[in-house]
Length: 342
Image (cartoon, rainbow, N blue to C red; front, side, top):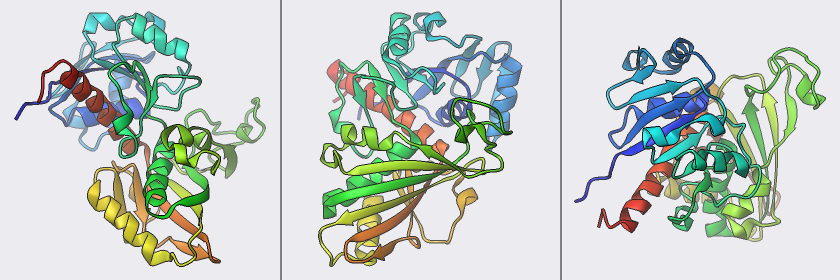
């Protein structure tokens, strides 16, 4: 059996997602982080990484390098794609984990500086080559893809749920609300900004927010075009999110037990993607989960003849794990194209 070639990975942005990607990659044998670009100083980035990890002793700082058993990553104090010389590091793929460089022009800067392919950790700001959600549309990827997004944690969780249920039941329409941990771009104290609600303290308020998931779901699941709405409530918790989804189906005989059976069977097929929580968990219990979605088996409710509510949990570490899955997906595709594996 052929061995998977080691992926040489670059990361731009060493915030929470970037640190989680690095930590997860350090526990693999097939992904090696070779360079990290961030405006932060090396000692500060190392300090934050250690605070993020269950085993902080795994990662050492040696000069301008973050070192562990699998990687020796050069830290570059750079925060603009146009300035980062990826060609120097012979990367196979760059994950832009900043959440800021969403437009295609920024991705082109990565490519122009030597990145063969760039993967956004968030939804794109305009047209790109591919939006990939592992467990949903991996089969759509092509070697020619250069500007790629893995969506967002919320979009991926919703896509996995809708994909499973629509395949078995047929969904007439769906409405999803993400009860979401506050994010780093929110204010901790009331502070004037262009968005009145987001000017209020994230640490003290439930803040209604828009979400782009519904806009992009049809790109991943064409059958869902015109059928999905999405919104968000940012709440005063640091980690752990809940997806509250209501689906409308045509068949009135479908009950809670049917939904439970469908999702458990799907979880058995893809245990890395979809998990099942039978305990009465709360948001802090999902911290550390690497699932795209953790189905809450106690949270399903049927209302009337055709509406069913499903609850599922997720957090950013699951999304970080999927970013690595997408990196592997393209590495395997490129290797097959080059005739390196059977």
